[in-house]
Amino acid sequence: MTYESEIRAQGTEPVEMGLDGETLGGKQQMSRKRRNIVLALIAAVLVAIAAYFLMAGDDAPAEQAPQLQAVTVVAPGRTTVEGEITATGTLAARRSMPVGVVGEGGRVVSVPVDAGSWVRQGQVLAVIDRSVQSQQAQSAAAQIQVAQADANLAQANLDRALQLVERGFVSKADVDRLTATRDAAVARVRVAQAQSRELQARNARLNIVAPAAGLILERNVEPGQTVSGGSPPLFTIAKGGEMEMLAQLGETELASIRAGASAEVTPVGSDQSFTGQVWQVAPTIDPQTRQGTARVALSYRPELKPGGFASATINSGTVVAPVLPESAILDDDGQPYVYLVDSENKVARRDVETGMITSAGLTITEGLTGSERVVLRAGGFLREGQEVAPKLQKNAN
Image (cartoon, rainbow, N blue to C red; front, side):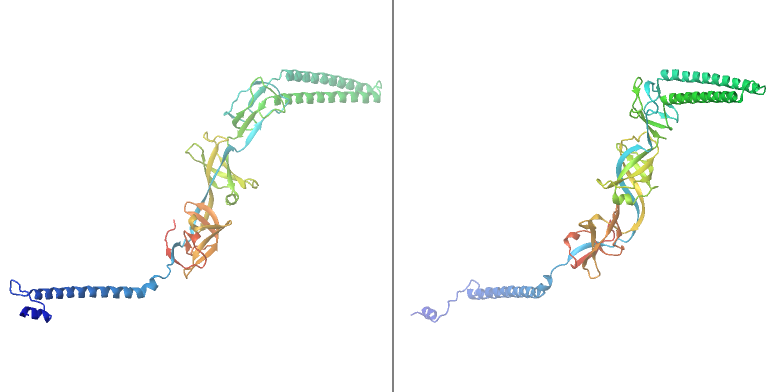
């Protein structure tokens, strides 16, 4: 056994020498030390990370607690609102006067007016042939003359008889008879005069005249046409040319309007508005449509065509009340309500009554003072008693 073999047998690793005289085993020892240092640093970092997550784990139950639902609320206060109600309806003559045949009628000779003409009271609208009636009038006048002649003769006979009575040539009975004859003759004169006046009145009624000043809206007669007392109206006149709008409103809106309220009326197809005034509010409601009529008086303007369609904005008065957007108001079988957030941040329901509609929302006439915190939106996802995280919005509009 050589010396080298003996050393290996004893378990000693051979030592190799480097070029600089250092052994290779010394370099390996230096590498191990560096590796150990790096591993120690890595272990320290891992321990620190583990400690961080361990500490974070202690706080996890608090973070996993249920989050409160955030809701936007507003304290609406009280606002002075100029109430306006929008309605639609038709235009019409405020006082429409149908004009027909008053007398016995006849053949129309001429019609000197047309639709759109302005007429004065008593002006002739249509002339009816009266040739026969004129002859009757002349006959009646002649009858008056005949009766008057008989009455004059009876009076003369009576005067002569009265002169002869004093001489005894005529008896008292003869005087009485002559007096009666004279009275009957005078009565016949009066009858003839009355008959003549009757014929004159009938003849005057043959012409169709305007019962009042105004604007002719319709003309339904032409020359040569035969008319009678049963004929449909020949003319339709708007008295004074005054117009109106028949605004159709629901029960609630109709109840908030009073006569005298101002209104702005805009005919369909026109961008011009006309100022009017409510002069009558219907005392009844249509049982089928559940609507009533507010009649808005308008002065005559050529743009206002009876029978046309128009819209109106009616001033319904001033109201001081809370105003909420529609998103804040919910409905339960016709009962409007809102959700409030109380001092403990819990949700509570409050029934309300709504009023007029404005550009800012609905006025609340009952149920709110304006100081409450009202949920603005998403109320349908809340329930009474639920705790929430309210966020106050200064301006709900």
